[in-house]
Image 1 (tube, rainbow, N blue to C red):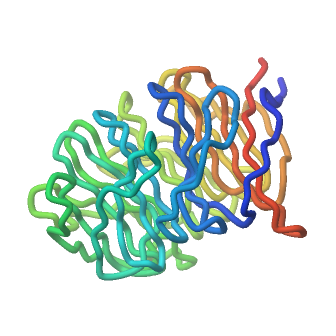
Image 2 (image 1 turned 30 degrees about the vertical axis):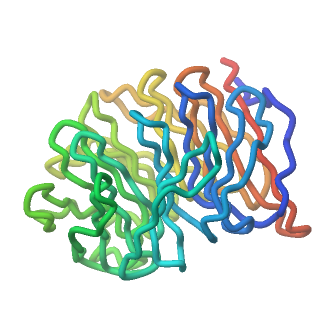
Length: 307
């Protein structure tokens, strides 16, 4: 039951590292935060061919507006968030925020961008219509790592990537008051990195760098917990196939049915610099981007699972 390539590895110039990656399945595009390349990498979701890099600055977070196809970018130490038109490969708008940006999430129902502070204690909230910062949310603990939005309640879930089990948690932000209203303790996780939301089963999927993958419900009840072999950085959830693809030097693929423990399907070692993936919900292709740590060269490649 292997994971196998479906495209050739495509070189990315300039080289250097990546952060978050996502797929716009409707418009057949892959978007990756190419910190080494100083911007938003745009690739064809059927071939992996690189179509361009929009120079928004060394970036980390990336999210797509499903209505327009525009891409929101969290611009790292540039302390800003931008809106990019990927068709014309131009920056449409940019808003300055109060600190460096790591992950971002977009809630299209309320037209809000949530941008968490890299190695900080805050979430910056941006109105996507006016493109102005409308709030700053203080989060407990330190180092917010990944942010998700519940499409039904519009609550915001913020992972806190701490090495201290006493404060390891997921902070929950109310969309009306824009304050943290509760936290989900995750005391058996160390350096919580990936956080994904299964909207069908109302389950939060979270893992720590200490080799544990867990599922919680929205109230904080632990649903499932399994050992995770190897290192994990970021994961991506495909609701149609119910796959969770995780990265950490390679691709580790799980199936999760919401009723039982996540089931390991396959693992493929790819490259030490691979730490983020995204699944194309249309084709099931698992897109990976990475930088070769020895040479600094960068690549993008599509993979698939063969049961």
